[in-house]
Length: 89
Image (tube, rainbow, N blue to C red; front, side, top):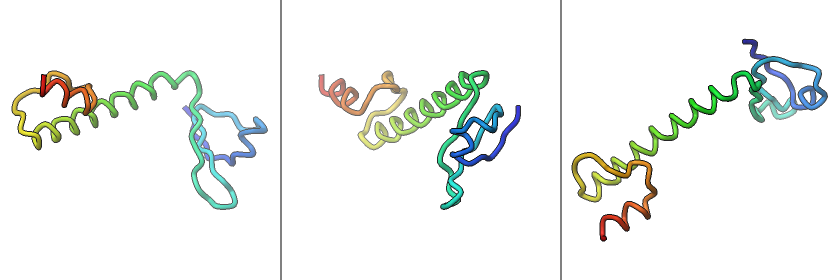
């Protein structure tokens, strides 16, 4: 796997190809994005989804702890509105 730091203009021109490209703006020297080849795209998406699920579970646990519910949460992937409505049903 090759990782390169390239300018956005070079990426648009298609001059630099690698498995992972970090896109940078040359004038402001700031990161503008990330290009991942299709070979690694599915793995990266799965990693991002797992990270988001973990954040959502931690947030729901802290929310339910604050609201006074104890024990395991049945709807860990539910939104705040769904949890609140199920609590008052």
